[in-house]
Image 1 (tube, one colour):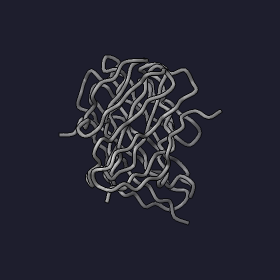
Image 2 (cartoon, helix red, strand yellow; image 1 turned 135 degrees about the horizontal axis):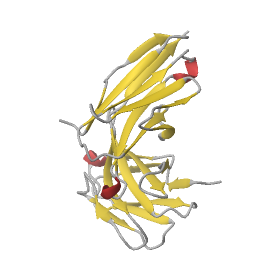
Image 3 (cartoon, one colour; image 1 turned 135 degrees about the vertical axis):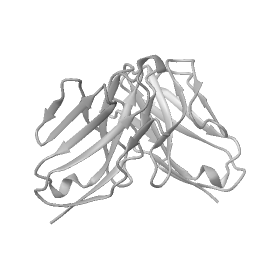
Length: 111
Length: 112
């Protein structure tokens, strides 16, 4: 079993739709969590950190459930520009900050 | 602000050739990483460094070597390239272990 697993996708949704991605992690010692966005053939860029209390940034909401060891990302009112691959990332501080990446979930938003 | 810069951006090698990929960051970050990304897959850690003069193996270190002689630079070497090393290579750096990682633009390497 992979340490970080994501919904494989792809997700194809119309503009304006709400879409949710889930990610599970297996190491209970994991301590910090992130969602990164990667556009085709480009480098990953931080979308948002994920906090225990949940956090929101505009149309994006991230949730963390430590008991069940999963992270979610909700995108409301999808835009064409949201089309990308979303990577779930998990860190352990005692692991030299090495990040474990999920394989990513691809989202395509269509007109 | 340059952030993280990788050179070269593209390269084609013949099997058995050697090359060095350079990663430079201007953010005074302690932690630096080299990843490879293959089609449809996530990033896999090759080697990493927790500070100047230190390096350690990641998940897929075989066939690669690294050096961090200066804090701002992290070099990835391929001594004898193989077709299995055809990939996109990303360098990343972070200030602390729980902070955002910043990535370079990637190096697309093809080994024929």
